[in-house]
Image (tube, rainbow, N blue to C red):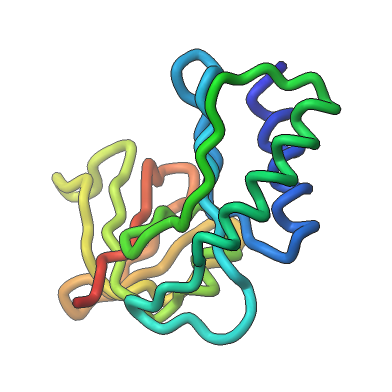
Length: 153
């Protein structure tokens, strides 16, 4: 099946259980499904551990059933927390983590740079804003390769 179909099935299942799908990776030619989940309840504190083993077990059991019914063939399913350096992919993620430090990697260099580290200010449907070295920088979402939270120790 196509990656988009698998992502949609996984997202529907994860959100139906009350979690946020932080990321879904399909690797090893579709043989490994790596799912990262998060909680949506309450404010997000830097460095806070929100997902427990029991949450991962619950989502794993449900996904195993759903993927079997949908005829999705895979060898291994991994469900875990996105970690302290989680990837931010959607506008919803960018808005949720506004005020936190991020590292943004661009597809194409801007002013001779592809990597920027600063404080996420927010996002709209087409751009992400971050404070970098005292200056607000605005990047088109289509130009962004990857955004990660910078862990706070």
